[in-house]
Image 1: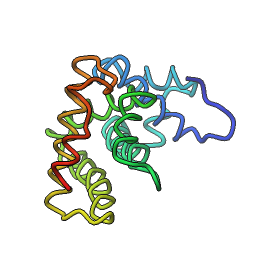
Image 2: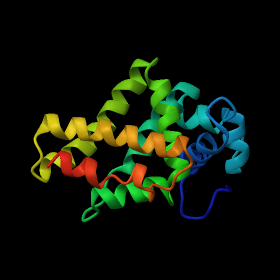
Image 3: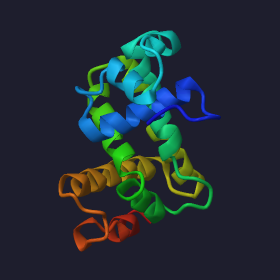
Image 4: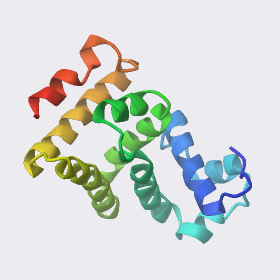
Length: 167
């Protein structure tokens, strides 16, 4: 993913980082691999993010900025997007989520990102506790679909019954 016109180096690095993490995994997505794939000079991650830790923390924020439902997008549409066109980014989100269980800064950013999704559900009239539980349940459903290489259209991963349980 070469740097394209109109996008900042920072944005290119973040997009490429998510793509690599979601494709080859977090262990293989080194700073140098991300810089090479982005077509930017080595040292760009250090320059823009202060190093690998800052880059990973920024990736958490970036993935949730892209993952949060857009206005008018239903929960079913969000899940279809996560398992369809945004599948690679969804895999990257789960890799980062696991890493965040061991890193306080990333954990705080991960929780803040999840809370933005929860806030949208609360804004639609769902009680706070139910919205948090729904997000956790949806995570389980989406993760299982990824593990089973499902696109979410099969009966086992159709979120309709789950969503009805939270109404």
